[in-house]
Length: 151
Image (tube, rainbow, N blue to C red; front, side, top):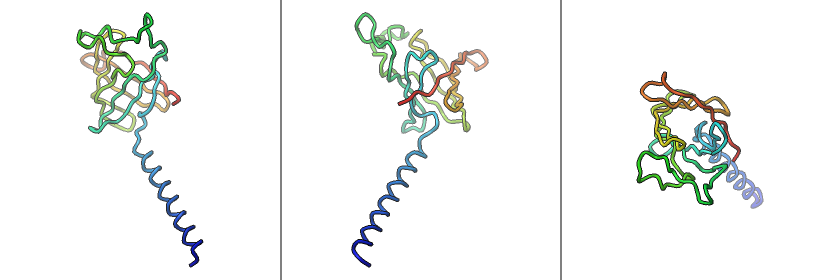
């Protein structure tokens, strides 16, 4: 076998390996992972799966990041010690477990607009997420719809 043929075969094997690894990495990404606009498109939330296998989300973009010329903070938080936290980078989704193909349950959502945390379920609907926050049982709650954001 000539040197040229051997090098060509090696190159093809390397390319095939890279393609396989890339496909496998993408296959491990869950459908809700990525960037999402909140219901009024005033912020983008990045949803990721963490090492514990649960899903979390944090604010990574704000349409209006400043208030009185300074970065917005979590000023309405019920815990006074947390009121100086920046709104950018603020965790807002906690501990969601994938329950079925399109359902994520047992999570919490924090609303920085009123400083309260609610129980929450998420339903994946293609390029939309139905986010249902509630107190007690899901029947007594409110659903908002988030849309997938471009990177």
